[in-house]
Length: 161
Length: 75
Image (cartoon, rainbow over all chains, first blue to last red; front, side):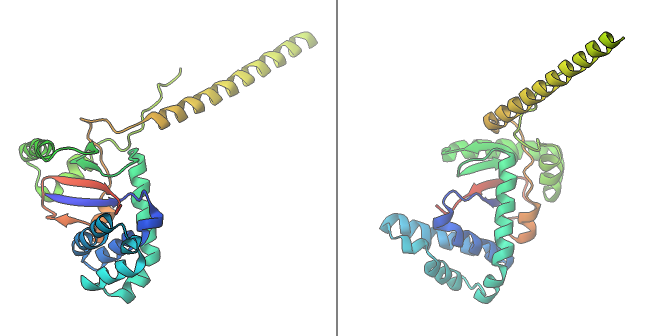
């Protein structure tokens, strides 16, 4: 299974720095490390202690350093990462995503809280469909989901003749 | 002849006004559809993940048969 997180920032004043750093971490091949570290040592810690400093720049950079990010390179990537975040949000807006978390499991939308069993059922169903397709995994998403799926959630107006 | 021309001008004006009114209504309807649109369960949506893959913003195997795109916010 593969997880592709896309930025959809609901509270930019609180977490923009963390998102920019996550993007910079991706550019340094450490996205997963920072993603997991910030959830546990940034956001989870904030939830427990309600200390907004845990979401702030100092803690974000501390966690970035702990997972081995090159902080000078991070500074250079800030502008490109802000553009990447904007692009993610623009793509999600095409599908009318207006809250988090929202998931697309092989293209099928799942919003809000779904039980672990509910997720498993959808994943198992999608896996069975993918296996039956005979398309290799490395090509499956682009060919079957991106290539054949709806390109937006917008309904078309009936044509008036 | 003058009367016919005036009549024709009047009809053209009426048609133009109606076309403009219909265009306005179309735009209002499109806007309403946009605001009401939501992704529907059971439909497959082809979210573009290539920029994320190129960036390295991905966890898991590139050969996976199941890809979960998560709209995510650290908050």
